[in-house]
Length: 98
Image (tube, rainbow, N blue to C red; front, side, top):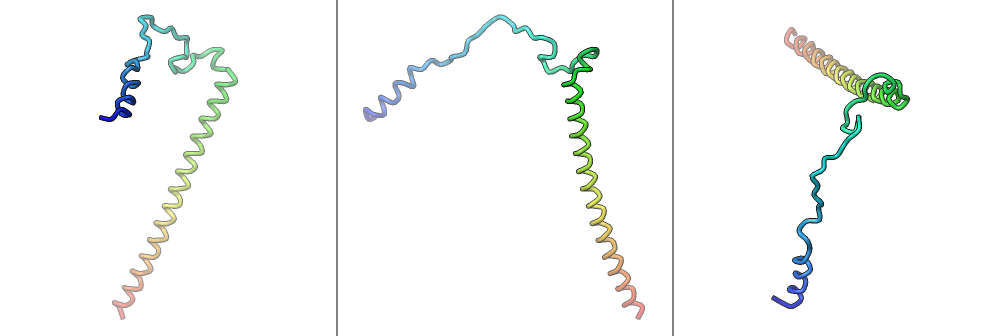
């Protein structure tokens, strides 16, 4: 092994294996810190809560409108394919009758 490779390995070996501090004390959390919904009462009439609910409702309506538009397009495409198939079936039945 060359001297250059040996000197590169020395700083890595001297680094501490862990820089994490350990504690036996549990953290205290206030209401809502765990991601739980707010309780009723004065907190439910908060302007932020109302805006958040309105934003969620608007997002859901937008998603539903996009799904509905996609379904309507799919239905119209299927109806066009069905009309084409019916026309071909009528042409084939006319050929068989003649």
